[in-house]
Image 1 (spheres, helix red, strand yellow):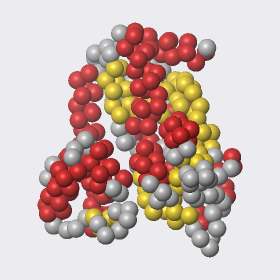
Image 2 (image 1 turned 180 degrees about the horizontal axis):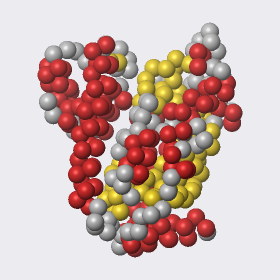
Image 3 (image 1 turned 180 degrees about the vertical axis):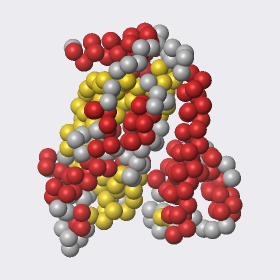
Image 4 (image 1 turned 120 degrees about the vertical axis):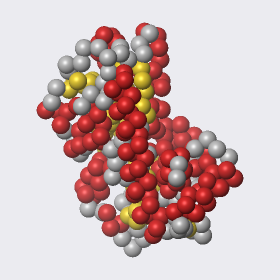
Length: 305
């Protein structure tokens, strides 16, 4: 069994669509479908219910998904630790962030800044759980983490009591969004009625944004009014499903600005269903890498201005 097959399966479980999952994995749809079939043959059980729309997992598929995520996470952590040991003495900044923040902040801000200043960065755009980011920084598997922050994200609290410096690079809003109808109204709106629950795509347990959405739902005492149809790991996966009009979901505004402006997505609730987010960058206060100090000074200047 190949690690790439497990990643294929995770992509399909998140996106619930063969063509979108194939695009996400950068392979043709026929090749992707063959790989999923081979995986099912290797496991000896059907993992995908191809009759449902969107696609769903079979009971065996749900069990296998949890183990697949564990296996790929263990594999990736092992590779990253080996690379961290190898690079520990080099003047290379080991940088970890999520896919969403890579697309919205690293690629447009930090990456170009590092290139301009000649700073070498070893980037890891990962699907780690929040506590794994914290552990990676505390145990020096990485030098810097870029993450969302909100008071509900208790997994980040150890960084407030240890030797960690942070900067607030920008601020964002977590918004409920839905597919936009031709007249511009959202296909689903909040608050939802218990008589007709609204389908919702939620974040998985590894996502930093899950506790923020949970806090919003508790505040409105309405979990029973929403029908959770998927626990996705990444904001971009949830955005794909919301655009297909399978339900609503919460997304950082930066992730869906283009779609909101274009009118393909619409905000599905008032301000009480939104939550403010900070985009923070953390480092160990005792880390004295020259390249990191150089980048940190530049970021401090940016924040000050």
